[in-house]
Image 1 (cartoon, rainbow, N blue to C red):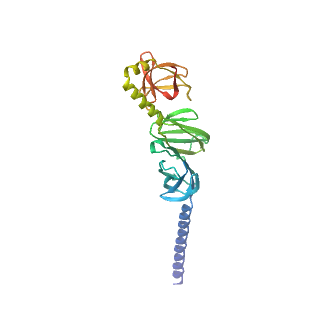
Image 2: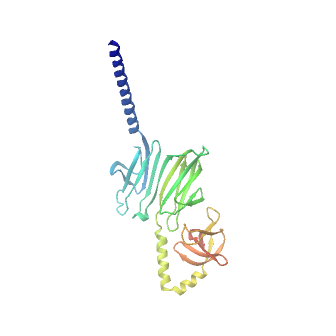
Image 3: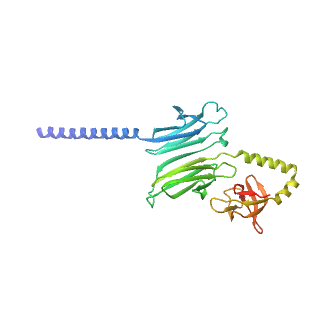
Length: 294
């Protein structure tokens, strides 16, 4: 009888110890989760009030602080007399012991505003070379040309793998928009997710509209002038300039021309020139890398 009582007490004690252990483990697990933080850095022009999930953080840009991990809706409201400046909002993710960087240049509307969001995350698969990281780039609008250290890497969205650790220059360009260039640091085994917004270059649009109006008024004279217009190919980061089948950056590459070459302009469209790059062969080049000679 005494043995049965002892056995029962031993079982009860074992159950209590197990439950207590589970309680302690659960408590520390949730406390650990609650104490996980990352870093958020926000810059803007003009200076703006920062809101996270519609709650003002009590600070203006430049803003930098530790924030609990998770996804947030961040909103920037321009301060002071910047009444003609558009506000901005977007979703950002905060990761443990990692930096999320937000930079915005606020214009009078969304199309004239620009900026970038950089988020650093651990790579899902370890790189083959321990000194490499990677960059994933998305752009607004889609299809912008991506340069890394002045080397053209493709059209966004694009993943740049095997990027050696260290500081690099990331540059984004699309005809008709202002170029965005940023220095970024790559850590081995980590990916930088880059979301980049380009601002429209209204001066090109006004020039295009003005040119179209003039062409409508004097079409014969304009056509004659176009046939005589000559351009010189300027230096490019890649050492050559792509000729495309259509006047946009996602069109198929037809050929390549070299800096210093001269061509007659057959037709103009916004920020593109149509040229005859070989006898009987025509294509389009970006006007950013061409200058008129007459």
